[in-house]
Image (tube, rainbow, N blue to C red):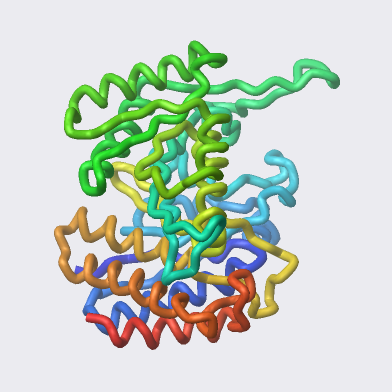
Length: 358
C-alpha cells in the first residue's frame, strides 16, 4: 500500500528546505521500500497570487486525503488581511484537520551543545487548537476584535475536551520515556481558564501512577529552562505557553534550526519546522533544513505507529541518526551552527549518511 505525502512549500526558505526534505525522504524511500508517493500544492504568496487566498479549499481537501503533510514555513505576518485572502495556512490546517497535539522535541544533536554546554533531551507537548490563538479558537469569526478604535480584546478558549486529550498525549509519551511530566500553567492569575486546564491534567495524571508529575508557573519555568533544561523530560502546556517555551528550549539545546515539530490528531499528521520563513536568506542556499527533515522523520514514526510498520520506524530512526552523524563534525554544519555548508550540500551529506545506516 502506498503512502501519500502532500508537500506544501510555503514562503521564504520554504521551497529550499522542502526540496531538501523531499530528497532525504526519497533516499529513505529507496532504501527501506516505503512506497512513498509525493504530491505538491501551492500555499502562501504563490497561492494568493493564483487563487486569491493563501490556502485554497482544494489544498485543505488534499491535506485531508493525504496520509501525511510536509508543511514548509510561511510568512503569515506579511499576508494581507483575512478578508483579502491572507489566512495562516498553519492555523487553518490545525483547525481543519483537528491537529490537537503539537509535539516539539528539544534535543542536543550530534555533540552540538547549546547554551551552557549541557545535553538536553526534552519534549514540549503543546495544546494546538485553542488558547489565545485567534485564528483557530472560534467556530466562526475571530478570537480578536476591537469594539472601538482604541480597545482591542482577545478571547482565550480552554475546554475540558482539549485539555484532557492533550494531557493523555503527554502522559502516553512520558510512559515511553523517563515517566516524568512537568505541567506549565498560570493558574495563580488565570484562575478560571488555566484552573480548568490544570484540573483536567490532574484528572489524567491519576490514571498514570507510574508517572512523576510536577507543576510549574510559566514565568518560573522560563527561568528554570535557562538554569538547567537538562533536568526536564516531557513538558505539558497550553497553546501560547507551549509555543514560547518550545522555541526557548530548542535554542537552548543548540539551534532553532534543528528543532523538529509534529502536529498530530486522531487521523492526520503534519510535519512542520518550528522556525519561520526567513525571507532575508531565501534563495541563497543558506537555510538549515534539519528542522523540517527531523519533522519528516517524526511524521514517519507517527505513521509507523498507526500502520504497525517496522520499515517506517527504521526509516524514521535512520534519518534521525543521519542528522546526528552529519552535525557531529563541524564540517557538516550550516552557517547557523557555525559551519560553512549550504542547504544543498548539507542535504547531500544527510543522504550519504542515511545510506550508511540500516
